[in-house]
Amino acid sequence: MRYLVTGRQMKAIDQYTIQTVGIPSVVLMERAAAAVADVVEAEKKALDSCNIWAVCGTGNNGADGVAAARILHNKGYQVTVILAGDQEKGTEEFYLQKRIAQNLEMQLVEWKDFLPGRCDILLDAVFGVGLSREVEGEYREVLEMMNQANARKVVAVDMPSGINSDNGQVMGCAVCADVTVTFGYEKMGSVLYPGRAYCKKVIISDIGFPPQSRRAAGVAAYTYGPEDLKRIPERSAYGNKGTFGKVLVAAGSPGMAGAAYLCAKSAYGMGAGLVKIMTAEENRQSLQQLLPEAIVSSYSNLSETELSKRVEEECAWADVIVLGPGIGQSETACLLVREFLMNAYVPIVLDADGLNVIAAHSELAQYFTENIIITPHLGEMSRLTRQPVSEIQKKLVETASGYSAMYGIQCVLKDAATVVAGRDNQCYVNSSGNSAMAKGGSGDVLSGVVAGLLALGLDPWEAAVLGVYLHGTAGDRVREKKGPHGLLAGELAEEIGYLSKEG
Image (cartoon, rainbow, N blue to C red):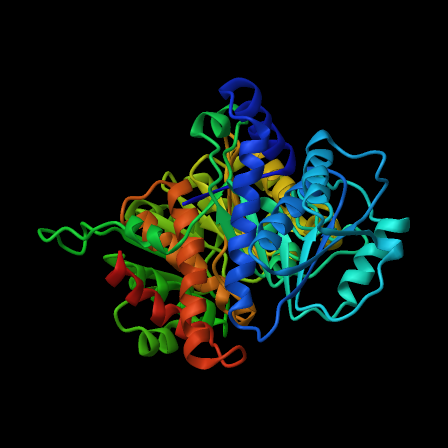
């Protein structure tokens, strides 16, 4: 597990460490500079020459850059420090590092006087985590010059300049790094897109921030890594199919069996003991052939009373319910959603058409309980919130958190970097997965994975978070085998079953 911080939280951590704990700012800065210099040296190994440009602003990020340039200079590297911004408006730390560099007779030049030549490694230390407004004027010219330098490697200090550290948005113009060396904790903007694409490889350097500083700053957001595969629940040696939970998948309108199949197969792959598919009669034969391990409970031309009674019976059977994949938005679909929400006392994963029914009949949201997990993609979230997709993309965390808080549910907002929000300000941002997974049926697999984890006994929050991570990890592994284009949702469902080998 890795914590994620916003720019404001990182500043609070920094100040608490300096002012309350008592670690001097210059000590933290020297550690940060040493970490950056180490990365530059590592990158140099792949190059036959090493002409370094260190482009430095006048804030503490620029001070980090000047200090790193000094360490490299003392090791014999050819380093030019290019100064950006008003030199009369620097921080104390910047002036300190600049004086040291001058005393060592390093090559310092203001960017307007700089005559570009060959650049092997570009060190980006203009803005860091504090940027909150559009990059304009002289600074924009500086960033454009950096992007046009044709450097063989770009190393960013803390964050690529021009990327908002809170949400990953490009603030008008930004530097695209090959490696980003960030200090203490990974920044939210390096996990969310498009910031993740600009950061590329992120190296988190421990420069001495104590855990007390993180707690004082109220940091709660996090992401998972390979070590978190151990969170998959162990399977008791003394158990039976009932021990490992019963999942009901209410999915599939006539002729739409695929979503039900992928969801049910994934629930089994994740470890559920029994899976039953409640679907339209037209899907029975194909589902029994595709997944003979599943129980199929079909319906056709039932009256409202009969369907309501059937739902009650299925709710009494199930330990977990997946509601919505492929059910359409007919009157029958609306009735199914309403009856399941009214009658279920077990966790529900509400997905796909189930969400579209809620969007069209907002009064049904009154039946939401803390056991509900919704899994909308951006289009479905747009319909639920009446916000345009373009706005949601700019504020994924705020949108998911707001909807979750409004109804007291878990919200899995699916995007290139999926956000999971829960009550009590819980926030998870996923760092697994890739664009090869952007295929029909991928969301159905995710619903089945989450349902399988619920069946194994995880609570809704834990199941949602771990399910998202495992789903993305399965996608990464299939992509590694097949490349970026050939992945199919069924292969995700197949791969899920292998992940528990490493748990």
